Image 1 (tube, rainbow, N blue to C red):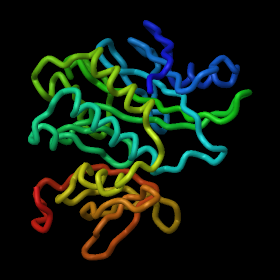
Image 2 (image 1 turned 60 degrees about the horizontal axis):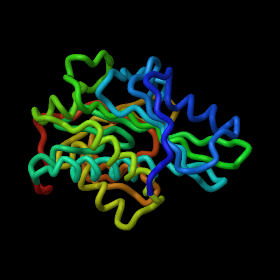
Image 3 (image 1 turned 90 degrees about the horizontal axis):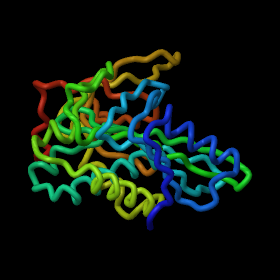
Length: 260
């Protein structure tokens, strides 16, 4: 399926523009993509700023959804969809394909560096219920141009692979893959588990404690549950994380029970 595309040289935010179009009833056909060459005020989760220079994919896809809110697992499923599209379009060999991972629940990583992220929100309008799939991917510019101050170092596909990256071809492939996406594809949890950042290593997470304050939790990724929660093995005890974030990987620790 190919999405209708509204293309702009510059927008404050594709996410905000797509939401305003849907609220005003100005989108008649779904899926519909809002794409900008450059964003002035791109944003990620928790309203974090997202630097969006020329040479990336900055877009929001409007897709149909049920009246119920989008379940959290969809972020992981779409992240997996994006990595599959990137790997196929760039014809990555097994080694380079293995460098791509998902930092639960919605970040795209290569070599433990962030090169993309998803922001999934719901919207309502005169024509019903829509899902806003915001996506930023650092593609064909040097990592030195990035200005984001984040917990994780950022990179681009160009810098990470040190090869020419076909911007237009990759943009179309990712947009088409998301336009074709359907919730809960077969074997998504098992496939996503193979893509989890830190697989075979010990992660440091900040998770809500009993009183709501953030507390640290250390453990190895053990997969995903059916709702998209991250299952962590912490000293032999399994914890399912619904809210929280991964803040670091313990470099010196390797779980020898997990094959590379």
